[in-house]
Length: 267
Ligand SMILES: NC(=O)c1ccc[n+]([C@@H]2O[C@H](COP(=O)([O-])OP(=O)(O)OC[C@H]3O[C@@H](n4cnc5c(N)ncnc54)[C@H](OP(=O)(O)O)[C@@H]3O)[C@@H](O)[C@H]2O)c1
Image 1 (cartoon, helix red, strand yellow):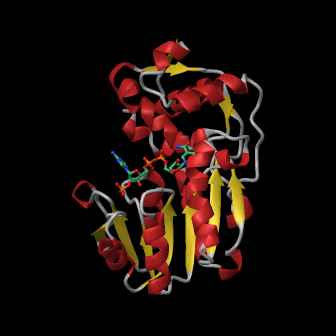
Image 2 (cartoon, rainbow, N blue to C red; image 1 turned 120 degrees about the vertical axis):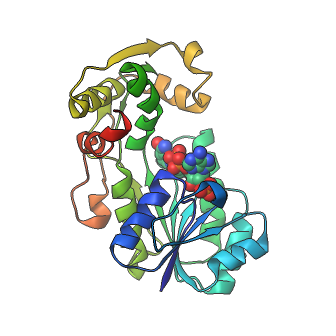
């Protein structure tokens, strides 16, 4: 029973690989850029070029279960290869943006959800909101200057820990009854960017200055549809739940926990 995890350079893909490995399950890690990827000792690392049917078929050879990133390129090739390989279950990492009014982020993920759903392959879809790991964008400025430059510092999000997404993905992959299900997921609390920075400062044991960027200043380094969503959101609390507990049965990790887990990246 081999698991294939695509996108091992991604924060969630890597967490899925680590948790499968820790549970002693056979896992093959795939990356579009295997030369730049790393995998834990004992994990087979393969290249997966989504545009090359032979590469996709080789990555899926002997695989029963797949954790799949929502990469539009090559989804039809992936579906054909998964059918040929007799894959028993796929978990797709999608986005909660698919549930809102039409927006480019939702559309990008639906372009992968829709063909996978229509394929008839056993499929569970995870639709998370904002990742706690988006705070990785602050690593270098906190490390260098103890400063965060952030637009919309008071917009509220429900950051979700990658370890909870990985645990939800594995729970789903290990339970055939989860096929056909769609799980919207948030983190366990509504927090502003400012409160997230405060949580990192607590984990670090040092103050961090937050400098507010204007929309115009931020547009150089942020994806514009994300800035537009934040502009619309105002400062109201973001709805909390369902969390990963709805899949795993275990309480979801807080952002404070995420900050502790990643504190060495800020030192
Ligand atoms: N960030 C959020 O708040 C959020 C919320 C909801 C949904 N999502 C969705 O979740 C997925 C992952 O999002 P993400 O933004 O957090 O991306 P990520 O985990 O950093 O990486 C996603 C993929 O991009 C590839 N990649 C390309 N260059 C990379 C690099 N320098 N370092 C690491 N990976 C690199 C990797 O695949 P290879 O190993 O194959 O190269 C990786 O699996 C996306 O589909 C996103 O839309 C994100």
